[in-house]
Length: 193
Image 1 (tube, helix red, strand yellow):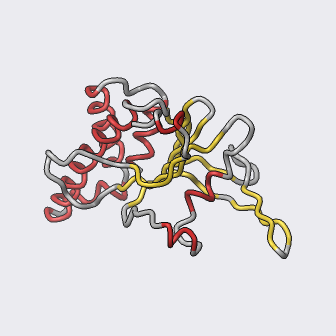
Image 2 (tube, helix red, strand yellow):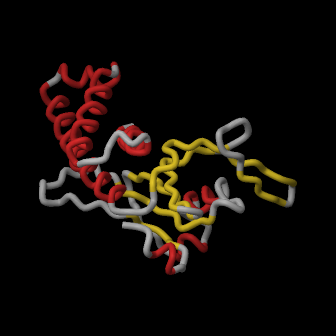
């Protein structure tokens, strides 16, 4: 919820400085805490403490997201991008022995730089990319998502997982990395952060 809202605000041009990032982060967190499903956590001291730590983690994450998005030619094209029949983006058509199957879904974030695009999937669990798993048909989600955007104007630059930790970090630990595969092209390799 937080990361998608943050990416959308960044895409709308509302975040251009670190100070903007901090202000938008506080606004988003304030909107979240007003939601009924979260506001009740402040009724109990133990859950209130956990929520405070979670919000501190969101602030750390927003700083990492800010620097990741600021230091790249890739700009957020869409967040929570839906593809499928009657959606903003077309469905993915897969040919099977039983006929054509149309896949629908939602992509956490799509970034674009010139004719290149990349898919970002936020992960709270494992964010590793292991070739053996890919070739065995595991963890293919982000690669499948590329097909929703490929056309003559959009060339895939890569697919990545962005680990959103629910571990609590020290203030010194503000790095966040994209983990995935990148198109082997000098032009693409020079664009990211």
